[in-house]
Image: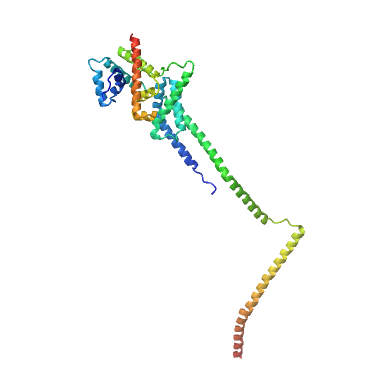
Length: 190
Length: 185
């Protein structure tokens, strides 16, 4: 016998089909988390869509390398890096200094607002603005923990940081938000 | 060691206190210092703001990924899978072709040689008219000889039968007739 094919065509097709099905399942499971993180981080729907597409296609390209058990951490790490790159590209543009806050839907935007709801909406606007100004890694950790409600262990895996460090960064990040908001609110009431 | 319960110390631990992440000793120290009647800062207000931030972050809307985006990603992955498959097939053919084209060519040449040799052996040479005539004569002669041989074989057979069967029977019957003739006489 001169040669023996490693895989027959049928087996190759089957493997491809299985890989595609697995990828489709993973995309359906993580698409909202990836898009949600990107949108909260960037505050711009168009950029968040670009990042989501880039991350999911990168998952397809690395489908054989990514361990399924560590998929959440891998995806969030890649998403965060893609967001940082997108932010860098935005800042490099001449009009790119303003933080994009257009995309997060106003939850209280319909109809005339009662005082309490108007106050809450106003606070959320300030909060999003303060979040957009937060530096790394505080911003990512605050989003992952408080907005996406991930466990400390998951954040630790995604950020490649020890658990105690994650907690420390989270508290410090929220403290920074508190300082920013206190200042803004003080300015507005003055 | 007793913690230094300064405003900065309290400020740095306010979020951890809110989440219940302070060690018991620090938790107690925080409460003692923050809620003391003679506390300098309004820690109640700070705690209220910290809680408002935490709850506000948790209430931020989590928008769903647009279906058209997911469809585009899956379509692109399918397209790439098809491209990968044909690329792998081409690579596979290139890899294996190099390994087996030489033996295959050698086998084909060998087979062609064997076949042509067999055909050459079987092919009858073209005959000239003289040779064909001579050959026909030889064939006729051989056929004649064969017929003669056949006939000779029959004669021999007759002789054998005459000698071994017919003559003894005739002798037997003739002898009996001779004896009966003699008796009648």
